[in-house]
Image 1 (tube, rainbow, N blue to C red):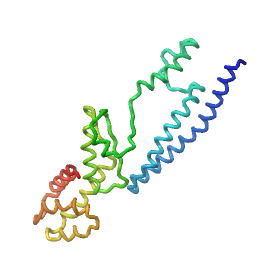
Image 2: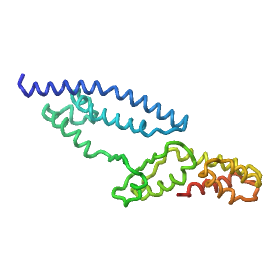
Image 3: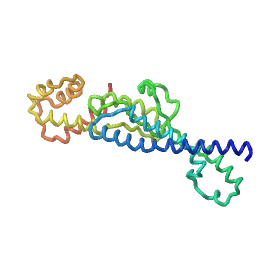
Image 4: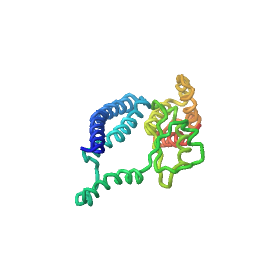
Length: 237
C-alpha cells in the first residue's frame, strides 16, 4: 500500500468515525423540535436559543457527515449517467457534483442582529420569503410592533414574495377575544372593565375600540369584530 493510499485510508476511517458520531445529532434534532413545538403551541412560550439549536445541529450534521456519505456512496443523486460511467467518470461526478449543487442551491440567510435596524436599511438583497420570530410569547400587545416589522420587511421582498410572522393569527385572535368581551358589556361598563388591565399596552390597544363604539349597544358583533381586526392589523408603533 502506497503512502497516498494510507493517507486516503486514514481519511476514510476518520470520516466514518465522525459521521457515525455526529449521526446522533439527528435524534437530538427530533427531540428538540418536539420540545419547541410543545412549548409554542401548548404553552405559548417561545425559546429562541432552543429553536436556533436545531439549525446549528442540522448544519453540523450536514457538513460533518458529508465525508461519511461520500465514503459510503450515500449521496442522493439522479442516477442518469452515473451508473454507466467509467470509474474515472464516477470520480469526477463525485467531486464536481456536490460543488455544483452547492453553487446552484437556494440562498438561505439567518440574520443575527437588531431586526428593526436591519429591516430599516435600504434593501441590498430581495428575498422570496422572510420569516420573523422576534417575540418570546404570543401576546396581542406585541401586534403594533410586529406590524411595523412586517411593513419594513415588505420592502425587502422580491415580487410575489411573502412575510411569515410566527403566531400572528393567534395574537390577532387573542385581541378579537378581548374585543368580544369588551363589546358584549353595556356601554357604561366598558371603561370600568378596561380599567382592570394592569398592562398599559393592553389598555392603549383597546381604548380606540371603546371610542369607536361609545354609547353603542352592539347588534352586529361580526361587523364590529371585523372593524376591530382591520384596526389592529393596520396599527403600528
